[in-house]
Image 1 (tube, one colour):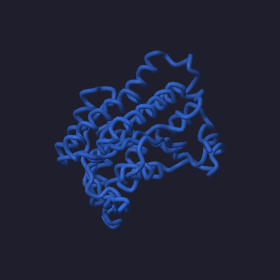
Image 2 (cartoon, helix red, strand yellow; image 1 turned 30 degrees about the horizontal axis):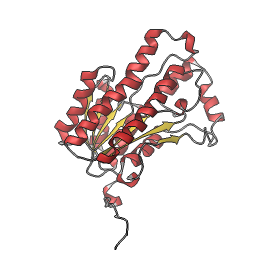
Image 3 (tube, rainbow, N blue to C red; image 1 turned 120 degrees about the vertical axis):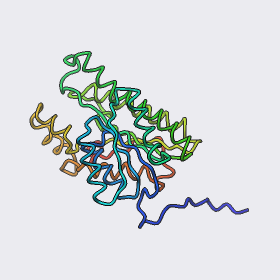
Image 4 (tube, helix red, strand yellow; image 1 turned 180 degrees about the horizontal axis):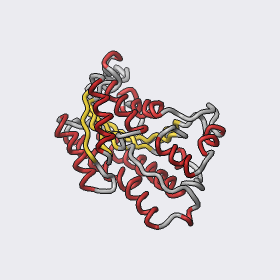
Length: 266
């Protein structure tokens, strides 16, 4: 009897890590999401960018097209269930299928102690950072089932979800809950061939972190000092981790929350 493990076939490296895949990315107008959109397209994916700001989406889409990639965009508000569903459906309308999704979009809370955050602020963070990815995953699983049959989803969490977070308590709480949703989805959909993972970035030089720096001067310096690599990440470094988890080269990885933090939590 031949007990040799079955080898999965992957595209040649020259075709790109994500060759032939249709990808959906939220929060794709700037920061990690924009870096991911550009990277995924370079790696051979056809990408649909989703975010709230049309001008930012158009700029990134134009960059991808100018570089020879395939991309389009759709305005999407993660707090609006109909908007999320329509954005995922648009990927299928454009490309005929959905293979992979990167749920990156998020909102930052006003930094400060838990008791100083108004209930409306807490509700806003919940709607975008937890309910939004849940809505997206639900629509993405349905679309993958109906088209590609198998696929992969990556949620963007945070190292702030893996420990107490005095400055961003609601943000950290929603990201920790997102980790749980990720693991539950992996267990639920694994037998269908749908892998679900998360990445937990450390300090990354995005517009969100720069805004945090403005309200809490010195925060970037503190992040760098607490990171063994001694620096913050470039958005593309985070996008690279998401791309690997979405690719067939991580075919036996599901249900994990991968720290991409320069060793901050080591």
